[in-house]
Length: 152
Image (cartoon, rainbow, N blue to C red):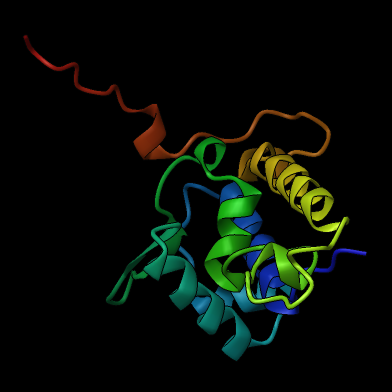
C-alpha cells in the first residue's frame, strides 16, 4: 500500500482549501482552524509550499496565503513532491544503491508502478480536488484577467 506522509496529506488538504477560496487570502491560523489542523503544522506546510512556488504569501495586517497560480494548473503530485520529495513505492524506485539491483526481477516493474502512480497524481489538479462533484470553482482575480499577448 502506498501511503503519503501525514504532512503531504495535510498539504493537499490545505492547498485544496485554498483552491476552494481563491478570492481569500488566509493566514496559517485561519487555515488551521478551517481545516481542523494544528496551527504549527499549517504554518510549516505553508512555508514549504511557498518555497516550492505553490502558494504565495503576503505580509501585513491583511496578509496571508493564496495559491500562487490557478488551481487548475497545480497537480496533486506537485503538492506531494514539494513536501515529501521524490515519490517511491519501494526504496529501489528512489535509491540506486540496492545490492540486489543487478539480479532483481521485480525492480523494473516497481519503476513502472511508481511511474503510473506519479502520472495518476499528476493528472489530478487542485481544482478537481476542490470539486469532487464537478461544480464550477470560483475563479481567482488573477485567472479572470486577460493575459497579454506577445507582440511580434
